[in-house]
Length: 574
Image 1: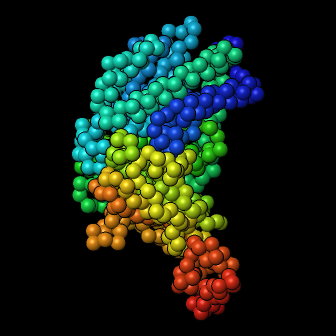
Image 2: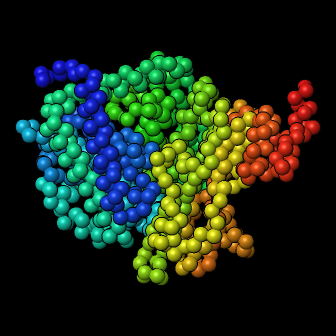
Image 3: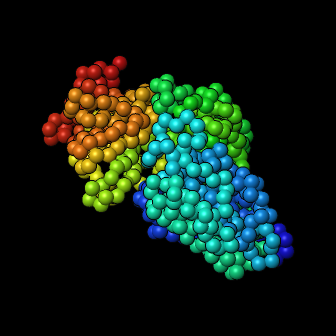
């Protein structure tokens, strides 16, 4: 075909699906090859395919926060390396936070893909995944670092595979700096396998259709993505709306950290401006700008083109503003390890736009309130680090209740770790795992309920409570009620009992913790909830009889028959 000759829609769609399928094959290879459950069970990764201009062609589903997070990272690392210095078979390792847009353990491998007859790469592949240890000052997660150099070994785009051969000097450097070298290098090889599958798939597509045809098809896909996204933005009301929320603290001081966004819609473009948010703080909750871009892109995509596989065009209407040196645009050497700020901030744009877009729900439980367990298992004599993303309640909407025990919206394709895996890989035992009655924000539509998990240590170890919205409540809408925030209770029922947010604690044999997660915010006045809906909640155990009477104004008989209380009856007659 001639250069830039327009292709028919059928050809474009076939090629688009081939490229999306290539990303999915990379995803399946990674999941099947990974060594640690945070990748193969939790799905904590992001996979992207780019064209020669480093525009996003396709992604595989992974952690939602990583949507588009590889975009800036690829460009910055390529500038550092020099595209002219890349060779066929090369693979590069990047985890420098301010380029990578993540903390140091979210290691990104990327590879140029060359086609016959071209001196420069015709495409790029990127796979980022969470490694379990790269020699940071603490095992597991670093909760109180104050600069980047406490957060692990740093690679700025280092060639780790040269012309198809693994560079042993680099992998040995990783081996000797990791507390868990077999897991870490095993996951490196899983990512490498994923890249090779992607490379093979691209060559198959080029051979089938011709590279010029594929390039043109992708140009048209990206053009269409932009057109569809701009049309969706243009359908939204013009104006500016501001929202404020809070992160618990930075684990150095106990001070709340204010975050703010102003969302402006102007015709077919939209701006998310974080001016007014806290300056960067001492502790590791600062976000590199790439991480901020990731959360905005994910939220924007959900509002405009939620049902289409992502490509660069979908984000063309979007502008993101964050002042250098702020918590949303951290600069060297700011600590960035504990990225829960991004999770809390994901719903900040929703909070702003909920003032004008009726379909946006109330807040979910606020963040991802999971845990990590560390120690040495006496059964094997081996050290372990395991993690679990805990479910929360989702917020109620104008026309339905929130979902129960769901992953946070920033993590929606992510999964929790099964009990069987946790107990097999760590010296812990589960005593309870259940939904929490009365944990949802009440309303005409109620939020979803949260989760209670009680765990006992079989051997001495450590527990890390992972949450950054335990001091302020998730927000509700239109007169709905706000639920209690998440918390962990260490050593429950003893004279040492302690309620914590993000925290690290040493545990001895038979010590326990209880992790309680927040429900979602309510929507509308609880006294407007239909009697039969309240009765069903009581029968299902989501709402207690006492709360039904006190909050919803409904007395529910043992057989499920509901009766309005005087408070509800009197209100309806006013």
